[in-house]
Image (cartoon, rainbow, N blue to C red; front, side, top):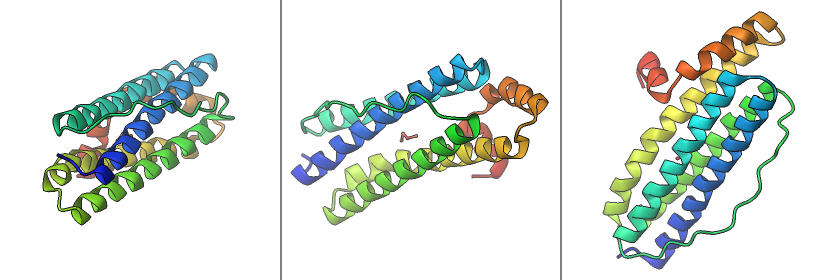
Length: 172
Ligand code: OFO
């Protein structure tokens, strides 16, 4: 059994993962409306991944005899201003998720729940990859600036990028 406190914290994380999926879905739609097909594909994939993160937590809480609460979600922005701003927001959002996972891990230690602590290690590793990926696309777009040719190549190549490819390049 998980404690009430931990159940509450895991449910809060379920909501964060679901909201992340919605934010990235909205970013995908915005990019698609701007003709950035590659960026849109990248964000659609990212949105799907966040839903998988949410489901893993849902199944874990059920497995441990806890009660899952599927709550309403905050509506994401629909206009992201520019690709640079959107990717900055993506990076900041991943930092926020990492902080939230770290807070969860701290609670498992306070409660001596080593099973949940162990379960969350997957998220700790995943966040390392996702932060590195978001930082890498942000660095690239900042380098490109307003260069149209650069933007064309960026949009063409972004879909090849995954967390794993970044991790293997950085040795993470
Ligand atoms: Fe990218 O956040 Fe889930 O874990």
